[in-house]
Figure 1 (cartoon, rainbow, N blue to C red):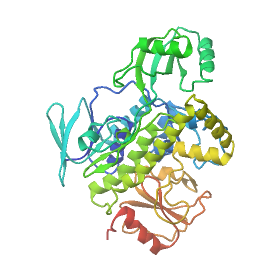
Figure 2 (cartoon, rainbow, N blue to C red):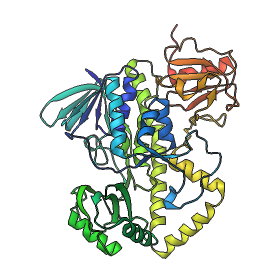
Figure 3 (cartoon, rainbow, N blue to C red):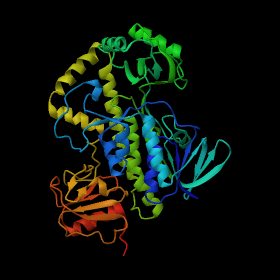
Figure 4 (tube, helix red, strand yellow):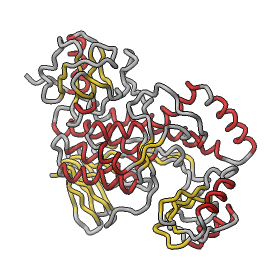
Length: 475
């Protein structure tokens, strides 16, 4: 029997499968599409996702294919200088198309031994106390210990589970695509600059060789958003918004998206879980969608592996919903707020001006950037040190860097005292005795996802916390 079936071969699905394989779990990815998508909905990775790639030794590949940009202008497109003292070693946005992100993550998964089957559409599922049975479109049945739906906003897994997906329907539609233009660059730039004075959802980004990534408002273009737009529809919307269609032709791809905001009521039903867009959809403002899904997978992977491998403490797998559902809800709130600030009516524009003034205060600007980039996320681990529940940024050590020690996806005790021990948990937790001028605490216990589970210097106190995250000691 398969350990875990992952439905959906996008960035969330392959990231999750890779995390499982780090712990020896047999992960099978089922993807209904025969080929990787050419549609580029996401254009970058935020700081927390960049940290995730660094923690798993992937950052060099991503940096080689991306471009670094200053942090700022994320919140409703309100541009402010980058604040000082951001709590990350990666204070930049990495511009990289979703197609490349997906390719790099897929290559990583394949190297780890993840099995990916394309043209495999899941159409049915059932479960009991011991296993999940999935049915494919060709009639094939597969059994696994767990199933995770990473199959997008129209998730088949979520629908088959009957999990509620409450929220707000889409009110604002946008056309998106990559097209060639005959208009000269100076004309395109001038028109875009003028239109964006009043319409911030409009834009054209040059990709080279006369090709642009273009976005245009598309109110009422089609009742069925699942149907790809046509080139004629794009031309019509460009003329309506900008007064010209720029001579667009030869589209590489065209798509449409709305600003619906919905979240699954539950991320787990028995042996079936949801992650990424299957668990939440929201407007693209702030560029958080792909990042949120990758971070879901990073939270879930080690916990599910612990269940499969038999050492998970009670409630560990349920903590995925407990921790990630509030994070998803917060993204829904901030993206909806940003959409309001992009509206053209006098009321929203007045609020936008006020928010812009507030962002001149560096603490406000920093708070919003930490929210968008997810470096401000803190899980509720109860009362304790200010680091408790937060992920620890990469810090320099006397013998290297912290994130270099986390490549295997294990827990980590970073011990600056040299007096502590993880005897009994050495198969799950690495003990590193080293010092950092950047870390003003005696020792920290990190979960495999880099979040701080304990701070201190007392061995008995440490022994009281290790079982909460890493199960029973092995003699």
